Image (cartoon, rainbow, N blue to C red):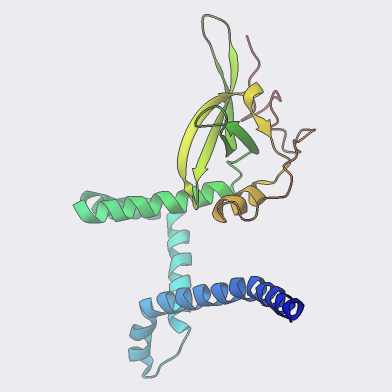
Length: 223
């Protein structure tokens, strides 16, 4: 009897692992659809005289596209800058607006490959290791000579847009053989998607931003 129960339990756990992410995704998409559709959906329904699910979402996407087109020309930028000043001058609205803008801009910057390399560093103290992303390289000039530093953004899970920025000597970093996308998934999952083994990268990445390389964003030469 025990083997049968154990087998059923294993099958149930396997089913949970497969179905829960699917259900969570469907629920999140449904919630997002309803929220976006409700922005303009009631107005459109009143204009046409009938309920048309999805039309509010479509209208919202069209407006976002039009705002994007407006923001890419000189006159549009002037108009949007004026509207932004209104939001940033209101006490309560300013906090919400600035926080939302920071999150969106951080996500957009991450997609532009601001995160160059995935590293592991001893932080916040010796013996503890944190995952981080190299954003740029620099050189610290001191009395004992120059030191090549990497500017490393260490995200705070489960929200990768919050964290700390630290400057760490390049020779104290462990460069991981892991893509930025994989590392972001690891952070978002609070470590549940961590690979069984963490491997050190043995060769430079194709972007040319490896430590010691030349070019924009790479470590400048010492001296």
